[in-house]
Length: 354
Image 1 (cartoon, rainbow, N blue to C red):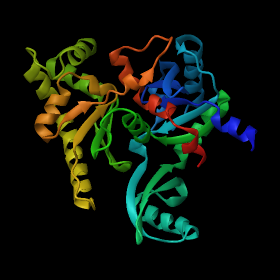
Image 2: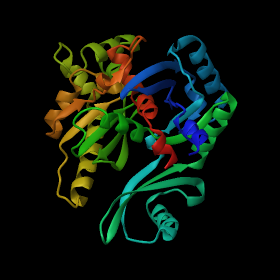
Image 3: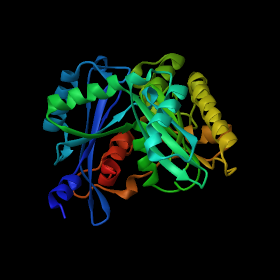
């Protein structure tokens, strides 16, 4: 037995989520079957440092990470091995069916499918795939393609920081792992990760099926309320977080201000539900819509979506499955910021090294 290899594989990792203008980190260790949060933190950075998912000023991000580690970390990060997330809006994820073929023929088959479905030249992409299921005649394959310039910028960043990058996955893949660790994840579901300026949406049925992105997220809600109600950004944020779309004197005004954004999100949800149900070989129907991310905290959002989509909509609540042990847990609003970082932190060695 190669004990050195086992030790290397079992060395902890932490998740690093670089968003629109802030980065979040979290490390989760498994202690006697429990997911124990060892450390976490959030730090803003200049949004000009990241353009279309590419880190074009890695020194600025490295400086923010260093400041986070030195001054704003809750708990501790005990490892230099990091898992990072590529924005789902800049990646390509889809499933497709192939006839049973020999393993040696898979690369050329994946190349053909990538060229057919991904509107980016193959030489500009890193691709990966996983066989989801097999019958005696065919197999279902999950394909993920990410622009090389995004991954290469991540490699440059970790080199500057002296970290070891062990895996990159999409933000939706990370958040879906958190969803699986929560409750009621065994039925076909729509997952919505409401970020700052966009909402990543996926169909999840034991794995990611197809992904999409709609414009509009938490910061977009704030901006729309400020403009629609004629208030400043701080007042708008209070209205959004305290009242949102729930019952208040300004409920109708808030709904009117947010309608254009919500309509785009709802349109994308319906499109993806149609895509899944038209192609489902089992005639299964979507059973629920699950929201997560910073924009999901807005009061009344789940109820409004439930009324319009005619499916139960709820916010993902995975935190009861995470043990903050001796460190202070983030408050309810802050927790939603960490869904991607937590999903990254839950990755297991077997997922990386198989």
